[in-house]
Length: 427
Image (cartoon, rainbow, N blue to C red; front, top):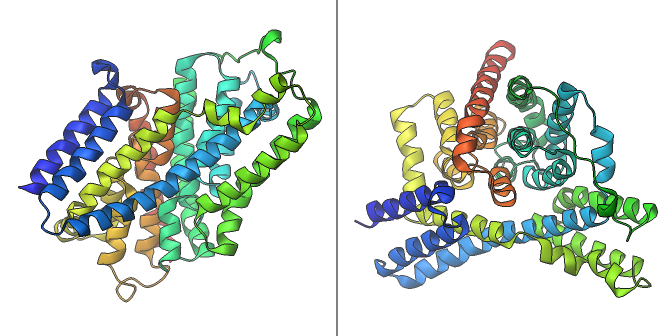
């Protein structure tokens, strides 16, 4: 009886999250209650409670890595924003040509995500679009495109998406081959939605003009450029740090936060306390949207409970026995990752299929990297990028479902078809 009740709690919690604006209960509260109820049910029904605590600690450790990574990235982005650093990019891509602006946003997000990762890139693009776009609905459409483009960009890079990184670390793929095989399909899954969205946004895009009294006079041009270069350089350094040291990405992010903290302290130490305050890391941390981080934590802990009771591995095994065809299995896993977390789904498949069955750089692993990386775009709650946008910009679940999900789905399926045809034609 444990698993059915657990699934009911999870589904009800998920429903309340999606109905946030209807029931007027913050989704962060719902996510936290769902997580605690799921784990309480597990431990109450467990014969070995120490084993449950041990598993809970393991999941807490894994999720905390993401939370601390998110905290570090959001603080650095907030600090760059406090110095008006993103104004440089906003001015560079500002154009009255609607089509050009949409394509610039999509292309920058796509390639930046491959170098950073989809979550950090999304946080950066949210800050830029907040400076650039006046109309809320237009901004939401473009943020939908950012989610699609960042997930697509992360899928073909070994450091761009956590599932691609998992496959790399697990020995299923190699960096050069994954770029070569998945890049074109990922590009297609970004290009198709960009074309659709460029037709959906009517007329000219109203660009935001910052009032003179809102211009930041606390930092000069040198300080703005210095913090922008140090901040972006720090974000770019994180994947390099992981490659060199093999430490988790959050360690690199916290190192970079510490460095930029020291830089700002030295840079502003002679300024009056009022001016120094708004440009400090302390102020940036206070501006971070803590409820969105708690939501992130709650939803991942809820999904972890399903992994603990074996629902996700059983689901992967069911797909394998029911569907059989590896193309359809990988595509189904990608669509499931829009509802469930792609990390445990990919981990389950890594356990199911050995390297003897599918050797390193096998077609199946490459297709899985694409589907697990891009399938989450089909729902706003289906990826770290989507969860970040939902939390920070308060985009409604059903608004995304109505306006963006079908676009993401078309891009996802066309990209998968391109990948399969590419393999059959050129292998």
